[in-house]
Image (cartoon, rainbow, N blue to C red; front, side):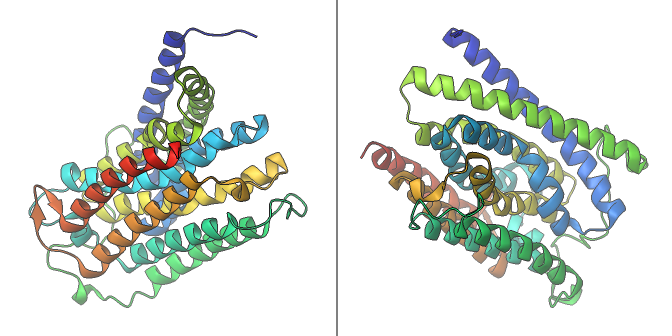
Amino acid sequence: MLVLPLWVLGTIFAAASAAVWLAGVQLSRTAAVLDKRFGWGSALGGLILLAVATNLPELAITVTAAATGNLEIAVGNILGGIALQTVVLVLVDAVGVRGERPLTYRAASQALIVEAVIVVAALAAVMAGSQMPSGLVIARLTPDGALIAGIWVSGLFLVRRAQTGQSWSELDRQPDAQANPKARAVRATGVAAGSGTGASVVVFATAAAATLAAGVALEESGSAIADRTGLSGVLFGATVLALVTSLPEISTGLAAAREGEYELAVSDILGGNAFLPVLFPVAVLISGNSVLPQARPADNYLTALAILLTVIYLLGLLFRPGHRYARLGIDSLAVLVLYVLGMAGLSFVSTG
């Protein structure tokens, strides 16, 4: 078996990371066009289109890990990725939002609140699944996997219902919240607003394929790097690998916010986080083994951390804080502090 030097593995890892970033920019630009053309609405578009496409690295990692029996790194990547992707909203708030009002004030959408609730519900199902017996697998499906998939599918309908039957009228919106988020003005370069739907689909599919291929390279090189450096699969997956696989969310979130599409920026993150637990039943389907009952204390710790971070932004979307401190809303500040403390605690849980 060919054993590559560590510097070669690092080069492959860095090149795949760059490919994920560049593809993420194109995904954002074309998703904005396709979302408008198909009339999904920015929150539902984020939940389906960007959420699935920008999580293709995690999908590739999960499929590869399930096929090779190396699920530890995939579980850490999924759960650590949800926590880290939530923190991406802190970056979007600090860099992508102009003016004196924070991100959750400007996004102001009932559909986003529904998405946040879906994330919490899916993560609660993950924690419940970790307590199930490991032998409870029927036709390559587990009860927890069916529940997680059901929550996500139900969430699609609930988000659509929140958009079409909006109880928050335009009169209820704060004066400088995002203006009419359903009337999306696509001004991104590279894929112009006047581009044909077919061309946008081709660019989107190409960028998605590049993201998927880069995800496979990340899993293979990242797993080898973790083995060489002595890092546990959970810790590496929840930190380094989670950061790299969050690059599409960073690029798409910042691009959307700079275009004034604050609802899409938040939906990209929350929609992606709602989709990531669906990868657990995918792993069961491929491996034939129950995944969540094998969860370690660090996995449950990451799940609880992700729930807490999501609840903070859920409250921010409900109460819409109107002031920024050090360019951050109070909810973003709380998320940043909690995440730093939480990751410090993870080092003790992982080694305990």
